[in-house]
Image 1: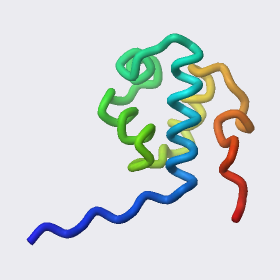
Image 2 (image 1 turned 135 degrees about the horizontal axis):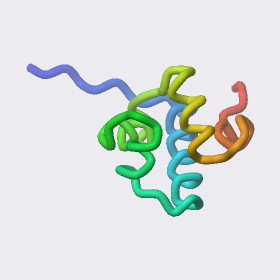
Image 3 (image 1 turned 180 degrees about the vertical axis):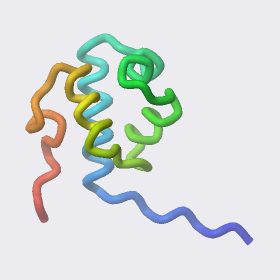
Image 4 (image 1 turned 180 degrees about the horizontal axis):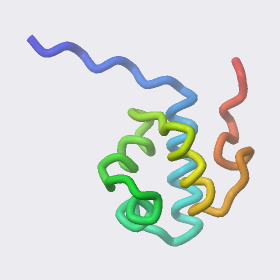
Amino acid sequence: MPSRKPESCPHRKRLGKNVATLRARRDLTQEGLAEKVGVSARYIQNVEAGDNFPSLPTLARLRAVLRCDWNELFAGCDKV
């Protein structure tokens, strides 16, 4: 019997929404963003869905490609 997928962390979901919003603001598709960041489009999908949390080097590349600051990238991800 397959195990149930764990519920996504609210901070990952918030980061994913921020990435999606910033990507749309730059008029990029998930595929276009993935190519510029050096990851797969599926990985970007998973980040935006809140299923994956990028490593620090990937976060830095995302921030550079999206031309945003850390506060924009993590907006709403305050400590609970």
